[in-house]
Image (cartoon, rainbow, N blue to C red; front, side, top):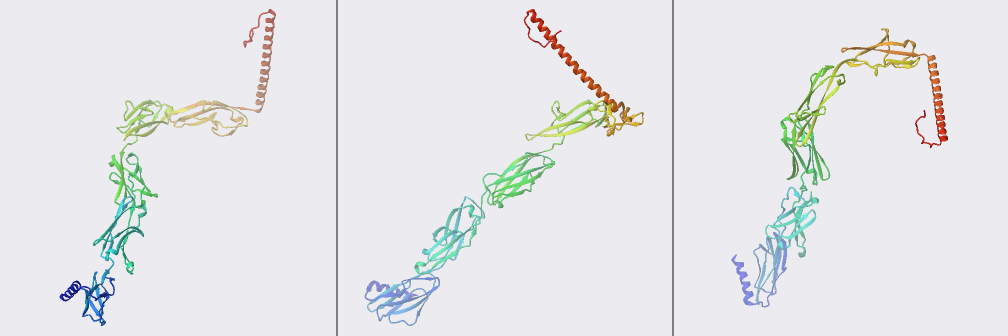
Length: 528
């Protein structure tokens, strides 16, 4: 009001015009730190014993405590919300004087907040941390600290209202899952108080690595309708790999891959089936997505339809001597080869004519078709077998006409008839006694004789005589004796021949020496 202002003016004028004189006013504490809204006791005193006026000038609520003495007064100043400079003053007979006390209000910030972090931060990119601080005093003692966990990243004074402090750090793999926060420090320890700290709510950082290289895609370049292929998409250098997703698609067909994770790599494998509706060129696409970024690769797959060539025989079963037409037909764009002989001119059709022989029975006719699809040669084959019907055959090789066996020996008569259909074979002696073809028998005199073997089928019949000779033991002795005698005579004759030949050579050489004629070189010609 006007009265305090008048008193302050009088004190000021007294100090200016009356000079210091001998009067002296003092205050209990020159500097006081107190919390905002707090109270403080101020003792005003003067050096003279009988002051005419002693008081305190302040806008703060004040209350005089207890009756003071002649030269001092105690005041309580309350609800101190901001810095203030209360002034004690006095009027003494020998002059006027005044003294100030400096009240500094302290309080911690009302808001300490770290700005939200990116949901995902790429490793190796700069990350800006921003902290806002509202309130707090005295600002000269207020510091803002940015933290990664408990690690101090930046320390700066709080300037402005609100104060904003920023710091830039390089995101690392190790920062994945790390907590970042911001802390204020009001340091009043030099004033005999303490360090007051306020910390923001922490924000957790998620970092990731998505390499700049595209995924590797392995798949068939061509795929046949109604068949199944395998597609593999892989990428290395991912972090954290467990958070990565893979999308695979062929044209409009979304594939369902099975994903295998490594330390920092993944591999997605999927089966793909195609239908006739997808025939043509389709895009195969693979994308690896890690949070808000992705890497993708794509390539073309040609879907084609290529049935096996069709091999036709005029009849699959013909009689011997019948003319047979063999035909091969394939895809209109294919080139065929029939039994190793290319079609002339090259194309999708080939045929030839043959006269069926028994050797053609069971013969396979193979048609190979080749189709070029997206620069690749695709091969398909088809085979048909010809059956030729022909009459029975009995020849010396498979049914010998003469057997000679020792009596009581174990023998197996063998006689094989050929034909298509396979003929029925019977060998009979005198029309009744059978020869056990293909069975092991003991040779007896009853087995001896001539048998008529008859092979019969729907294509006709053929007969052949076979003779079985049985040697008794006495004939064996005679044969052995004859053979031995022949061997002895042969050896004696050879020895006599060699002896006479050498004798004639010696006589001839002796005659030539007696005539004085020179000896001719020895030759291998036989002398007359």
